[in-house]
Amino acid sequence: MTAAKHESIANYLADPVFLFVTVAWALLFWLNGLYRMPWDVSRFDKVLRVSKIILFGVLVIGFVTADWRQTFNSDQLSILLFYAIAMLVSVNGVRLAIIEAEKRLQKFEYSPKKSLIIGSGRIAKNLILDITSNPHLIYDIRGIVEKKRSHSEFEGFPVLGSTEQLSAIIQSYQIEEVIIALNRFSNEDLVKITGICNRMQVMVKTIPGIHGLIYGHDATLASHGLVKIFPDRIVLWQWIVKRVMDWGFALINIVLFSPVWLIIAISIKVKFGRSVIVPVEILGKHAKPFKMYLFRLTGEDPGDAIDPVYFGTKKRGPFTALGRFLFATRLYKFPLIINILRGEMSLVGPRPEPIAWYQANQDELPIIYRRLMVRPGFTGLAQVKYRYEYSQHYLKERLNTDLYYIDNMSVNMDFRVILRSLILMVTLPGELLRPKK
Image (tube, rainbow, N blue to C red; front, side):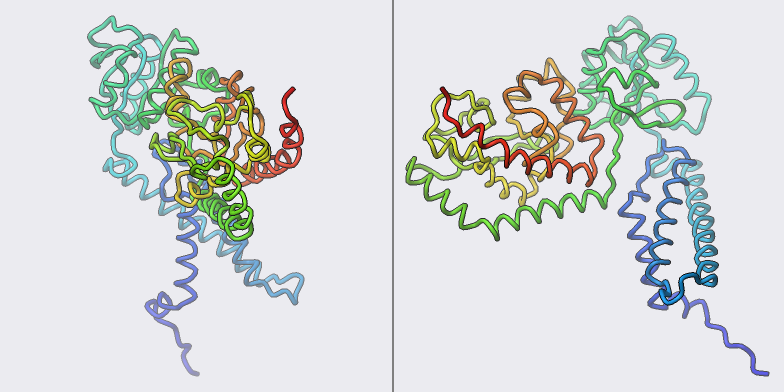
């Protein structure tokens, strides 16, 4: 009898199919953020997330390799089941082993996090006891911040100052995480603290129950009974799809509507005799200012303050017929595709606002800078929910809508906002085109 010939492991690993499948798995894991899961996500949740992605990948493989001539192929199902189990066990097993090694060595995601605890009462005392008695909690407590400083130290840690000095303390001690553990607090205190931390891109955590007072949304469970105030929910593949949608919208407008933009540009030039496009200073993602481009609506240039014409309100005095038409149809906004192509804006996002708007509202609503975690949008959830004049009157409600969008962003939500915007573009102009009495 002739002995069976076995392929060497080197030949198997060099097989194009094996290489393709390996790269596909790595890409799938990367697009779903599995290589960057924070340390304070529990091992159970990590295994659950990894397992969901593996099962999705196995289903795709099964669909691609299915023999559709047979309605039920027991051999293929057996192989897929074995492959799924092998992937679940091996990937999760190796991942848990790596996590254990990182925890022991305190490397990468498991390096100690420079932390502040805000509060010096019973809640803070119990929290410090939990952290110091549990080695797996890798908070490097740099000190305590009190609402009003009344101690030099608390539970063996220095009191670094009061909440009024929080911004300077975070910067001085290079703080990465802040834990709110106040016994007595007000909604204003929490909003102010989270607003400062958010502006300085510092993770904020607190005990369950407090987070709902801040902005009324569900928080994400973190380590040892804490919750994250502002969790990251959207994964990389959704960011990619969102950016592809931005580019698709911009390119379609350039290709299909260039003649319309040319006619509008000529009309504006003839009517006003000035530059067709006006730049407006906007505060963008990560508080980076940029020039937002709009079609001219009047013969005057926008000033440095919040211009009532170019920020959407129709309570602005007389308009020419051309200006009223461009405003009512929202055609004046379409030069924004320049900002979208440059990566300064997105198709869907919070309403773009100037620096003066943030400065005018930051004392009343410190958390307002949370809007700057994403690109401002051509349209958005708050834009379709609130007309501009009402959105300024109900500013807090509008801000809550912006925060809800940011903390629940998804491709599905963007599609819904786009659909609603299209409906408004059809129904709203008729009302706004009527001359004011």
